Length: 117
Image (cartoon, rainbow, N blue to C red; front, side, top):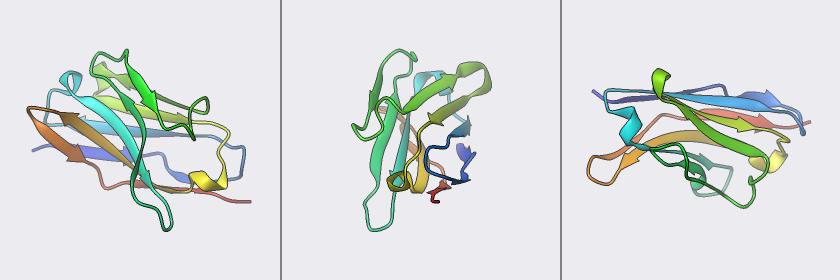
């Protein structure tokens, strides 16, 4: 059974930082592309950051480039999203996704991030 579990969300003031974690089990983690997505108030889910299975190729939404960093630790089957200089518009539910073209796409239940003064 595949499990994708996010953690690390919370409430911070503008300019603050959070690190989200995503623990994956039940699939060959090192062979899956890992991504972080978010859905905010009144907004559809959007891709925030994606990291290739080798850990070398990354892509970021323009709104977070330079502030967020996606990474993975294969020894822990965990992906991370370091979020710095958080702004109110970063508020939303953040979802982790593990995907592979020939093996499907798996989602976690999300973790809430609230940025407010």
